[in-house]
Image (cartoon, rainbow over all chains, first blue to last red; front, side, top):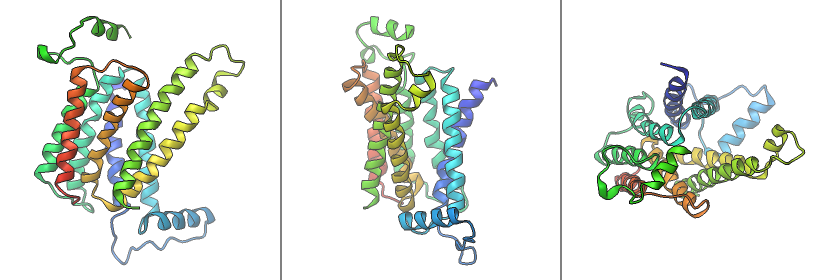
Length: 158
Length: 121
């Protein structure tokens, strides 16, 4: 696996993971581990109060971990984009919808439900992202292709 | 403000942000005659500044959505971003949208509609 594939792979995994981490910052905790952060540091105190006033019950530490992994995923995305066609890279981003769905079910503190609407809906979305994000895919039926072959050639030269 | 409004804000902010990013990339390309060093021109580019502000606002309203809805329900809605950006690229930058792009957009919309019909948890 070369670095570019690796960067795209990390983007997808870390991007999905960051959504799960962010969500888990909002899930209720046991009473014993309720957020009683030691407010020795002014900045942390302020951030906790701000977050609580905006989102209610939230664990700031997990939120920050989620934010960092989200930012890191974006960084790897930019690295991947230096070498991949935007459309090609975007097509792979569809995988995040599968990973977030599966992850939300398997993640111990989330335990979200599997339902038919979600499963079929995610399938349609992944297929849609594949179609919307690239050149005309191979084996596309004639009626779906653009009538002028010229525009496809132009696109390849870009 | 409920989660639906926050979701609408998230999609609006992140999509607009991408259009401003494209605008920034184009204006930087055309700015080769400027006296400013490339890095400074990049950082003070108004389009880029607006896109970063929009991205930040989108992130905060997304956290709002996550605080109320299951992530497996909420996250698929973000795919509407691609549909909005596709329409934006047609109407703002006059890009060529082909039939399979439209079909992809309809597939995404159908998927999101199906999930939203299934309920928030």
